[in-house]
Figure 1 (tube, rainbow, N blue to C red):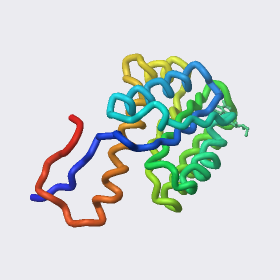
Figure 2 (cartoon, rainbow, N blue to C red):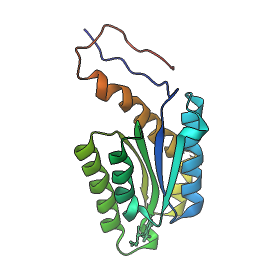
Figure 3 (cartoon, protein in one colour):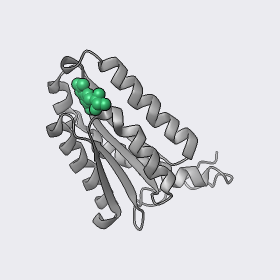
Length: 166
Ligand code: INI
């Protein structure tokens, strides 16, 4: 069996991070987790470029501009949509998930999806450093893994199981 190798080495890579300002306590913790993960994997803090948008609904527009700029190896999208606080929860969730997926499809640039969609703030807090870990870290790692995969998949697989990182 041959496998495609995975790199988790962020050395020398530049990332665009789009973070919503809505639900700031949650979103700032997502951002901390995201940056911590990328720096732990070798990224330079100066290569993490953060753009804050009003809410999750605005994430895809900013992500598209960053992706189309060609400056970034990957984008990370961070936000928190909490059902208890909005009657249009479903619309905002749909807009941000569809929008981010369309940017990936149209540009080919990997985007880690760290937008929480939860029933209440308690569930969101559990996902930014509580019982469920930090989804900002998870989204950053997913984006990083996709950077090498999207180029490696154009070539036949190697026999290596993994390379770089843990
Ligand atoms: N935006 C969020 O990121 N999370 C939410 O929970 C939320 N709620 O509750 O409404 C929310 N709304 C704002 C929306 O994303 C847009 O910024 C707004 O509609 C202006 O376009």
